[in-house]
Image 1 (tube, one colour):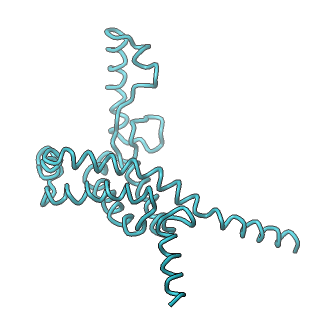
Image 2 (cartoon, one colour):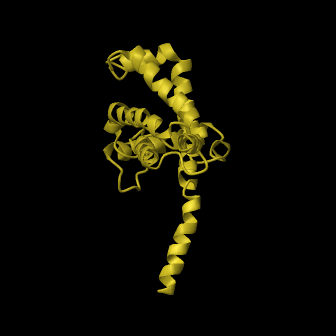
Image 3 (tube, rainbow, N blue to C red):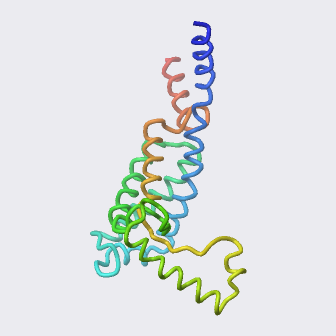
Length: 201
């Protein structure tokens, strides 16, 4: 019985820190979405052309509108995530953006973002890429300073699978349910202020 009480006391103490997890998710996601949104808006014409072109792009309808919606929600959503403002509301368009990205861009490439033939998730595209990777290494070893080129990390082939889009979607889904977090978000303090104002009436 005593151990159960200690467990409940420990859980009660942890409740004061339950805003930490949403805060970390927000701070992780914010720069990713701000950068993605800025890139789309700063290169508006090129992004719209890629969105709309059915031959070498995505073939999406209303490409200018889609660029504005995607870029705007990512950039503004990233800023909102930093301060924890309207976190649940911004999570929804950002999740939609991740679904669209996963289905239209990443889905044909499988799961892996980086080609890794040793992974149990490797598809045929990843396995086939190993020949190009080996040839790249051979060319660079023959004609380049291979040690310098690989001094900061291995040379890899981007597979561009759904891995990152799915991960970001899951993180945003978590924020949709938790909100910005206790004590560490503008949403929390706005809610407290509204409750206090209503109580004083």
